[in-house]
Image 1: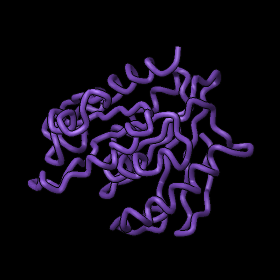
Image 2 (image 1 turned 180 degrees about the horizontal axis):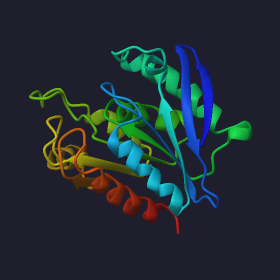
Image 3 (image 1 turned 60 degrees about the vertical axis):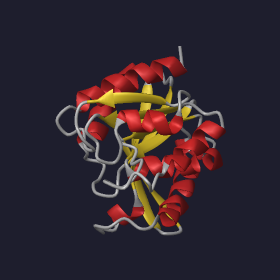
Image 4 (image 1 turned 45 degrees about the vertical axis):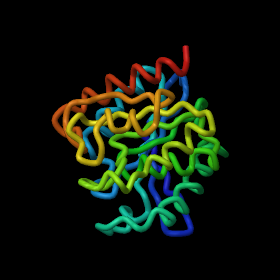
Length: 208
């Protein structure tokens, strides 16, 4: 594993890079607003390296700085764009296709910035479709940005996720989004293997 510190306008981010020997592409993921890169599903997904995917976990500046509360979406996006620019150029350049994503708030960032950073696809884990108990405050428009750009979008959603069930996400986004059901709530803490299985299947549709 290699560790790269990346300066952004809002502080220093940290990327943990595990490179595949014969890469089929790369997957870059970040954490949510309530946790870090130690989330069980993010850790478990390191298994994809053995199948040819370079895997990168990004610790966002606010976490590196030791803060407990994530900044507003605009600040998160401001950090993410230079992070990806640093990882897709120079000697650190990641192999393509380049899939970006994250869990929860990190998934939202990935959707909002996918076009700007030139991502080839987006992987959203536990996409927070709406705040718990407030379906009228939908964030589907953020994921729709990916679909409008005709980029592949995969969403792995817990069947008991209070931020929106798999069926809720399918209804909001339609058939063009690949929505996968996993056991659990918003965290996948008890069955991270479900996430790995679904992500592996989806990645296999992107490359030979």
